[in-house]
Length: 191
Image 1: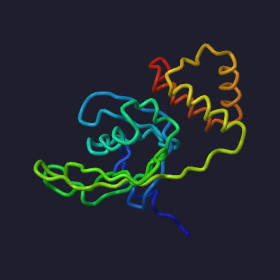
Image 2: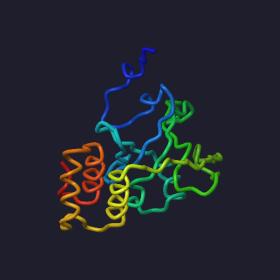
Image 3: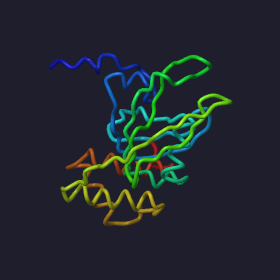
Image 4: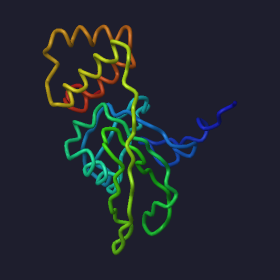
């Protein structure tokens, strides 16, 4: 198979609906930050290539409703995102990104989301079953990400420094997860 999906991706500073023309994608969150503007929430994820998911207000409502208001607890969790052609912006169907599945849910949940000023529509999110890592390094990173997500400052921990150095040399993809989580929690780690 010659996969052409990579040739149609738009150039942008964030994940957008056109990135999902080839189908849904499941992401694993490595960091959450809040800024200003119309899309204030940036959700970094493994392999995002510098293009975080910036959920619109409806999807932020879904996240807060199902996972709670503390974005730091989202690190290590997963979402399945899809392109919804019927998303309306400025009265025109432009397409947008929706969440179909979320990890850390006990059951399917349906909630009413605003479709227009006078109309609400039901929106359903299903539980996402995510395979747990089996290798020791990935398990250790899971534990460290949980500590970081819990607000613990691990930067002064000598064992964590050793672990990060080893990961940077031997497992850079795991080191990047930790770096992203630290950057989301501690501004001095942001590049």
